[in-house]
Image 1 (tube, rainbow, N blue to C red):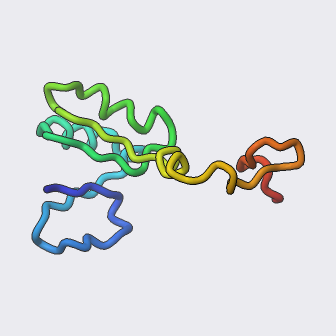
Image 2: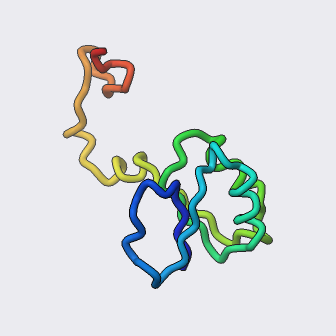
Amino acid sequence: VTICNRGHTRNPFGNTVRHLICDRCASPDVLARYLEEGWDAVVDFVAFEPSDATPILKAGPTLIRRYILISTDSVYMACDPASFRRGPTGKLLESSDAER
């Protein structure tokens, strides 16, 4: 098992797992080198934009056998839609509805 993050969060597993530090947006060359190693699976928790996942997907199935994206959409799908907060028009609230 290997974890990869920007290094802002402590590795909770200590020396029991390999820990790679890489910011996919700031260091795409480092990410590319890591991807070249080949992976049985990549579980991605932080792809905010399609461009965040693009380098991983471009690596292809020969280097990454399985790619799993965990998104907040997946979390919300498990919730009761009746409990979602809605705006005056009845539409779901979006970030643009927030007061600034």
